[in-house]
Length: 309
Image (tube, rainbow, N blue to C red; front, side, top):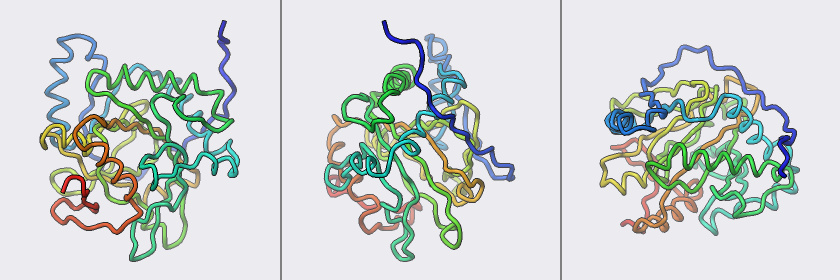
């Protein structure tokens, strides 16, 4: 009989929410509990449609996980960064440029954000496939695989299953900078590569989106809420009906706390769509590793894909 006792895990202490008076985006809040009935789904459909076609980002609440369950997952999400020795991290480092996926570790400063000024990213991440046993993991993370699997299944079946098939999740953290780099240490302006991304909200205000009015606004933290947005694949699937919203991580994120930040993000691409596998692999292998070209009309920096030219 399986043990009912969960393995011990150090508690991750998140920084407090910012007290700054930021210009927060007015995002729709979607109540996922309504999706259990035909009437509720009929009510949610136009809300979700309109929100994704305007801001491209929404909050989701009542998704089925309690605050305690969410906190436990954040505790586990910190394990790959605090309990795995550097030598073992190297064994599980992803060969991103060769294989075209992020499974495993990506160290800080792998991506070039501003080649002219020598600015590189400060994102350290560990990526797992939705099928958590598909690849081996560091020793410290293995006792938690049953809980990670349950979390992946919850996201897949209870959050996104009615809409899309969603094969991967991303865990990441970023490190505080000091000095001149501080003002430029955001993650480069981007659109997500997949179809739908779920970000589990956390207290440090760093994410900014660019709504249709062209003014950058912050995404406010809501306890135990999800932040959901669409990406490039959804743009392809719907013929441009749902366009990805430009977003980035701003420097306030790095100045408001001395602690590292842990987060959980889930990407949902569909490799069976025409050209999607080629698109995703090229975007993955070239992002932050090749020269980026500005696209003035969309205020984005991106490299066009040969596969779609």
